[in-house]
Length: 353
Image (cartoon, rainbow, N blue to C red; front, top):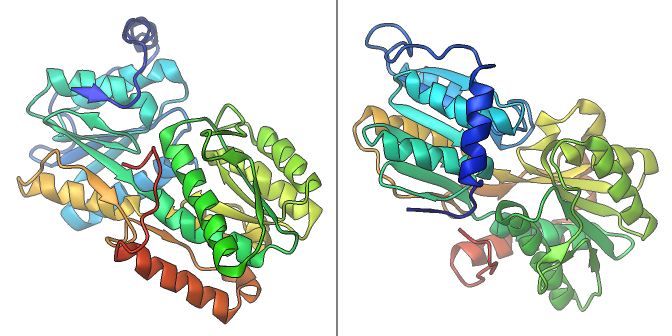
């Protein structure tokens, strides 16, 4: 068994023992709902349930699964690292058939509990865990980010665009790789010289805020990019990205590409005037499908990999900024979408799932 990224095991165990005393008592096994009712427990990472990212979209999917399959869903919200392992333990103790965890921070706890509870089904979102009873739910976001990069280059008036991440982690840099390659494709097709600030794909290094929660860090970093001429920004940093939207709104003439969910719907309405599109992960449908597999006795550990072909990734509508996208540019992006689906274009990244 292996995890792509793991927490130091000894440290996690100590942290778990400290945090467990502060947690609410775990329900007795089998108390996942009414007698005989199927149930699922979700554990968020430290970003919280309303992160406008994959915690939120995963929960939305499980809520939809409640309606479709009649299961009872509950989310255990982690507010810090010390909550992670205890919350997974509490989810297991609920007696539910399916445990869903979100993000790389929960990889070690998921692997540990899956090994101790081979009769339970686990799913982990946005991370890969190799175990017989764990389904990894990952997304080839580079494909959709490639389209977003081409779009950004096509609408830029300054010839400078930018991206930054919350941390140098594969689920983050996968977006950035696709974005850079999309800009490069636009330059190739149009003999242009649009520059990308914030990410060097060859070196796999660039601009990071160091967390996914401090909105001010995103604003300061974005202001620096704008000062260098960038007029389209792709933040891959969860809530931190809201700082980029704030800077774009204040400065004017700058647009933002959101990630994971459609920022037009998930962000405060005040930011709608600066949202060009979003690079989407269709976590909701993945969750509905996995709950269905468990209910039908068809669950396997075969990973779900979201692609343009299966609708697992996509770019959102242009909404209020549709006037920036000419019919010609939109047609080129559709052509690229079909070329990626047909494997005529393969968007490469060392972080591809």
